[in-house]
Image (tube, rainbow, N blue to C red):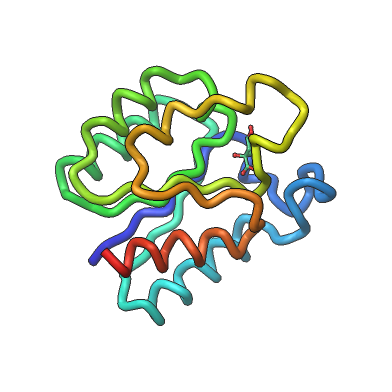
Length: 142
Ligand code: DQA
């Protein structure tokens, strides 16, 4: 089974971006680990990151057409993008929502809402990079 790991805005700076919150692993290292974890789980994993919402929507729409499983960290879009909400609604494969931090435990009120959660089979939050492994395990379990 193919699994797309899709990361949204500002996640390209992982490792340098607020490491006290998001850790020191870079996006390239995260991508490498996801591909290796996927191989162990029998998943063909592809990892992408974009700062452009339209590009993310195109990826989600293609995943809906292809029936791909999606592990989605929509980053800040999680909290306010109804276009992401509508795209998640169309997915035909399983969707797992992932966050490095736990948005519900953070002080900013806006992080306490997610447009992804209504369509996710599971939410993995607050486990750092390891959360992506947990999300891929959930996809592999079916
Ligand atoms: C995040 C949490 C979001 O609130 C934030 O906007 C991000 C990253 C996380 O992985 O912890 O950019 O999705």
